[in-house]
Length: 158
Image (cartoon, rainbow, N blue to C red):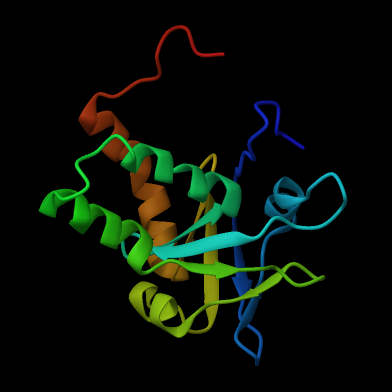
């Protein structure tokens, strides 16, 4: 496992097909990151991305930790209500079954255009689920977007 920080670290990418019941297997590397000390899988929170036509999958413990960020914001701000609605309003808790499969809620699958297969992309503490062709294109184009933005990692990362 790569959980040296105590948080899962989802890396790599993989394409998996949906089965006849609408289930998809979470990639084995990702399932390993979700495994708790007792061998059970941590639940996930799936949500439609407000930045890309894909889904975000968050370990429930990390997703619920985002709530502390809202504690510092103006409770009655329209902008904060919009952000909270985007983050929480379309979120669905899901639990992987014993084989590491999840069912994609229909509204989320529709948002991402997923119908036959899923392209998983590790994103550190979360992972993305894309319609395969769109996800492969987004991943392939990511280095060019990074170069164009001029962003780099801080010198003292560890």
